[in-house]
Amino acid sequence: MTLDRRSFVTAASALGASALFSPYANAQATGAPIKVGGTLSLTGPLASPSLIHKITGELYVDSLNKRGGLLGRPVEWVLKDDQSKPDVARTLYEQLVTSDKVDLLIGPYGTGSILSAMGVAQRYGKTIVHHTFGIPSMAKYDQQFHAWALGPEPEKAVPNVVFDAVAASPKPPKTIAIVTSKFPSVHFVSLGAREVAKQRGLTEVLFLEWDFGNRDFGPIAGRLKDADPDLIFAGALGLEGNMLLDAMKKIDYKPKHHFYHVPAPGPMLKAPEADGALSITIFEDHPPFTNNPVAAEFVQAYRERATRAGLPDTTVETQAAASFSAWQILEAGVKGANSLDDKAIATWLRKSEVDTIQGRMRFNEKGNFGADYNRVKQIQNGKWLTVWPPAFAAPGAKLVVK
Image (cartoon, rainbow, N blue to C red):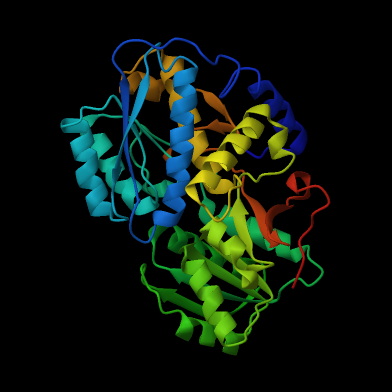
């Protein structure tokens, strides 16, 4: 299911009447706190995007408690550091369930760690909501729910929307280089991009992979310069995109169209060589997204908190929006079921739709995935701007080729 601009704005306006930050502030929450357990990669290679999710979660819990908590009780987020390691995440989720005895679970950052957490949730019959899982076919557990609207087949949806965007540019590409981390979700989509590129008549001039955690991108940059593709499709995660850009800069190579799947948004935005870079998005800090009053209020609160935390980019984009949506889904599930019973929450979510700041979410296709709200953004003059599809583009924005 896709959402056109008119439907999105209508749903967003309706959402503002009943959801986060308004209008039930200062309601009284009493009794023992409801514990929500989770981990994030507060250290290790995924620490940069995880900080975005930490700030978002803290804001949401603060607001939730001002609105009366859940079921009239205050909410406490029990957060642990999984060090960017799926095996550590597995151990910590075991602790959260068995030792900390949390009432609810929210997922960690990244497909590998989420898969580990999902296995623990399944073992104990716990419902888990997560925000950054990228391979729906691996989500076998029926009590897990996603919050990033990639659709049930992101390996097709993501490359197709990217290729649609660049095909509409003044210089549509004819050749493509696909370079990717072996991190599960970005690797999965990059392999899908190879197939979609063939179907669309793009000539592949280079395909390279690197191990997650790699920091030497010089050889990859050299191969890209030699191949000189019209489009680079980089399955880059976190700071990998910055390191690849820096390596290309050192050899005086300026790519034409260049796409980075899941960058660290702030650091990439601050790199001069990233001007013109493309990425996937579900939400950006501009209209029509901020026409939603809940989103507008979150954007302001996030900017203030991110500024205090010293983040290089203090705007809300796809990472923060996915994280925010996960908390919205968790809240809706508890309130819809009127219970902390995990099976009751899962049953309600599977048969329902939840309004989020990225659009209306449903959980009725492969892996409990549903809506496809993939959009394309580009760095232009120091800002991330949505450029495709045109209905969701920032006012006056369109894709440019550097």
